[in-house]
Image (cartoon, rainbow, N blue to C red; front, side, top):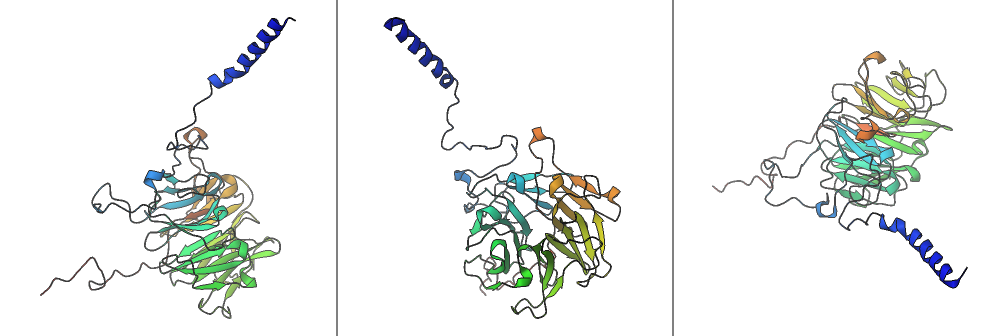
Length: 375
């Protein structure tokens, strides 16, 4: 081949290789959000100009539609862990659905969020496990975002009664207590063999703390920290699966209602109820499966004010509302179709009601907004 022919051939090859660049999409602008998973269009994360940690406008007021929300709405809160986001539903039918988050480290993003909790004042807490932090927000929109980093090792549980915040620091095998302002220095720490590998927390109407912990093997347990100020744990109560039919007990989350203790146990794919920590009147529902009354790796458990239970049926990618003893009456929520982008993926926690009493309203002389008129 002549030199001229060789040169023409090289030019043709170079031109062919350059063709894909002509059709390449331009890079997004710096201020344009990048959605890593376009199948989740409802998932939102705040842009830098609307960061949830921003303070409300001085002119905003509760009557102003543009005013930022100041408390969480009543409903069902879900840690949609596989989608790295949290979700709000007004009811099990999916009314009023709102979502926040996608995979990431910045405000408004999560990495495998675990337990979600709403305290008596309406603040939302999330144990953001793989970001090694706890997040507090005023609303599902992310407004009022505040983070606590305190040397956590994959924390999976969080609960708040308003003046104290409890964190299940799972990887460090301890429960750490902080003040209501999320100051980094803890008030106290519980580190005891009975609360090895804590996964979730619960506070009852008496503000007593319960810790769900342990793995299978060697086995799990629920611990009630009676007189939590006494760190020796001399009066703690422990339930380790007494009187259950199937061996193997590794509960991941629990609630209390009318002196009963309810737990989800993924080791046996079941929902468990006992009347006390000796296992009196033990009863269980479930078994492995996809139909109503069956579970696959149930990971989370919530309670409504009316006494209905909500199970985060993680392996079935759904939330189950338990309204009675007959599974035929139960309802489920799994999101819409894949094209709607709201399907759940491995939900690990669900929350609906905090039994801790709300703090009393401040007296006139204690409320800075209500100044006494001069005589």
